[in-house]
Image 1 (cartoon, rainbow, N blue to C red):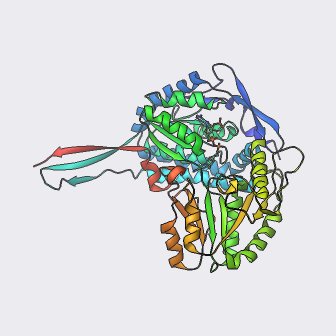
Image 2 (cartoon, protein in one colour; image 1 turned 90 degrees about the vertical axis):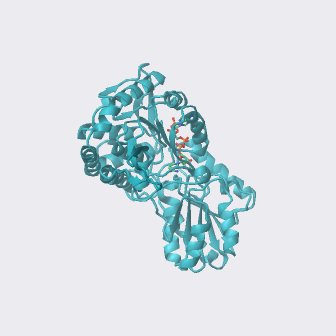
Image 3 (cartoon, rainbow, N blue to C red; image 1 turned 60 degrees about the vertical axis):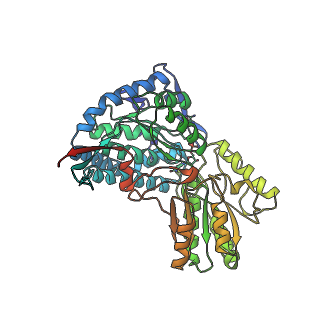
Length: 486
Ligand code: NAP
């Protein structure tokens, strides 16, 4: 197979600002590495504040024209993006794997998922509606007029280099907004490739801008305090999200925040254990566990704990670890050495406090940032991994004896992104659905992400929804007009 980097020509490894692909004003670049080998795969432009503001200038100049573009035309450009991504799926997937480390099969899944946001929001673009009604007391009418919020700043993480950007760019464009995306410094290439694809399908200059930088703090903050910016959508850690919310407050920006999670996955004794095992494997191991919706704590009802644990550990132990581009690999490289060290420390902390390792638990020697699938039991309540986002292939299995007890434990976290419940008892499932303080719940399913469903958390997992009809509303303001009509 050819080098995955061939799809992104050197001239497109630069900033996408307006109709240009250009170097940073300072001429600086930074290296992107393959996490499976530690080798540099590309150099990309390292923007500073001047470049960020140049992107904002073109995004704000393009705003009026794009907002006035007929919805059908905007929709067609989104459909063309969906088609191009689908046709070029293999190229995009290989690029994702190369810069992020996930196995190729999962990267293909991400392309399908990411592309689907363009198809979904192509359909939403032509269904933006206001309302017309009579004032209850009579005498006048009420008209609501949806309008695009304005130029948007997007800051995205490395774990889904395509999809996390797609689920912001697609609804923004559908609503008539222009965009500046700052992808994660560790995975900028996929977003540059998306911008190139959108240029090729004919999205007008200035509508999709991409600014790669190693100086996220300075560049993003300059964009957020500039009054031309009207919206921030961020996906990343709660810690950085809090910083950005404070900065966005100065400019009173609309914000959508998709932050961290600490999902509990609950297996009841009446569950179909085959279904629960499949669900737990997906919820834990999708994306090598580097997912905000990954199962962080697995609670199994005491009477089935032994059987579930033995079968889950056997499946985890059978997964093959290696370079994501190699055939048959289930678990690719983690994003960086810090992630491996963090897992090592979380496992050591749990073991120090009395946990037992059933599978894995030893970081391998050699190049690349690998950590084996790991299962722990007898994990005490004060183990750090029950509070922190594990963000890797490590699964603590805990037990419970009553629904109230496990519900309280599941909710005992600052996060509120997702929970998973496995049971054949409908009432029990609904009680958990009502009782878990999370924005999303998987019932007998470990995979919940779907562009047609509203994705988002509560508590410190975030504000707002991505995907679904709600996703486009995040990019629309409503003007209300009172019309005198006695
Ligand atoms: P992160 O460290 O918060 O970084 C996310 C993005 O923010 C990156 O582009 C990063 O740039 C940028 N950034 C970092 N510090 C910044 C600052 N001071 N000002 C402006 N931008 C800044 O998160 P991550 O490690 O990339 O991603 C993992 C996190 O994302 C996890 O917490 C995960 O749960 C969360 N996540 C949430 C969702 C969701 O939908 N709720 C989905 C996926 C991931 P650099 O790359 O240059 O540091």
